[in-house]
Image (cartoon, rainbow, N blue to C red; front, side):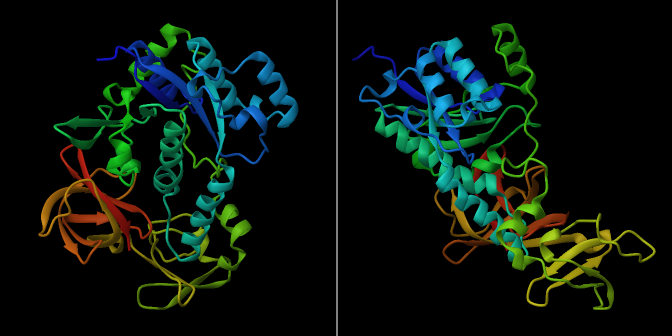
Length: 378
């Protein structure tokens, strides 16, 4: 048997979690290479997307960095890329930048199109499935590596040939929800070393190691909407989503006017500019009639949802099953019955009413901390 260490490509975002993922895997004896997935608009050339003949033997030298600064207009000095490179240097591991901007543009289009349809998208789920993990798997194969790794707070078990995606041990940072559409074929070659630790443990370990980003704040925004101006992104891409129309109560009475459905999402209270003597919330977006429907908080409650385009991380069930179902990133999964419908749909009936079930968001099914699958709420 060969004693040669396994090679692993680590997606390094510049944050503390992915930096510590690289360190922990190196500490375990893996041959580690760092990859920064570039989704910005600056044009990289040359060594930024270099695939050397030696694969993981490519080293990011000071000469390479100086040349890149001249070629890509300083992008390679952006805070995230700079932090990722600095950690790679400290660990003495190869480091490359892969350009994903052309493909990432499709994710932004999906985001805008969902708002145009009166839905509230989750671009992180889509990006993980269609772009980040797919590109990492492709690159890993190109350079002859054995594994992918990221800094996600989630865990993967591979026992007796069965791969399971599990929640991370830090319940407040768990990211398994946004990974449910990554296929088992990719998950089975993925390492998630951060999932076994709390965020505080990760930060303190990084501080002891002297990593420059040990106390870097977590990103709270969608990466292409840093100022949380979701409507601004949609307006730029799909201006037809902003047509004035009525705001009506549940009886159909007009109570106000809106400037475009893309300004709203289910459960929204602020920005309605409607006075009805009690707090009102968006309860439905009627795309066909360009109408915002509002109601009370009680009107937001529902025990049922339907979801389509379901992906299972197990053998697809043929009869109803019990599961805990999570309907948004910050939602605590609740007990429900999940009934298969057709080839890729489900109906979910919760034991107790849930607030603001939102079309376009993901419904993810859990058995304890194990992800069973999930789909898009219709």
